[in-house]
Image (cartoon, rainbow, N blue to C red):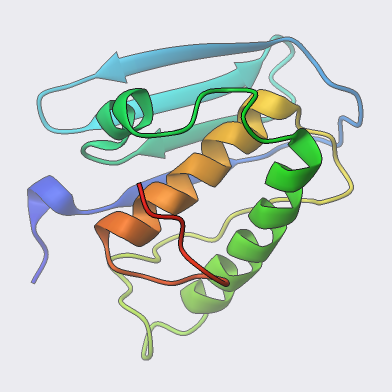
Length: 142
């Protein structure tokens, strides 16, 4: 049942306990098989890597631009989405383990900054629309 081209691998590493916003560099690598978006701050206190075929293209073409949502809005939505995501990771008999492979370590008490929250939020919107999932509340259509 696994389709190599569409297997979702989401690796989100949030390491450290930085509470202040750091300078974040965003590098995007596009490969023939998948898209990779990596976010890390200069001191590498945390790192987010999103690997999913089509996400970088979707982000560039369909996501609302940076600044459209406030950071508190993104943080609130991310808390809800991550909570439900992690619940599904723990229930592989109920939810497709090919979709929910790894848990996400997202601490609401840490200020990850706008860019990290923006990309996590948009990945969750992309994921819900692409894979016909509903994590929390209404799914924004894009």
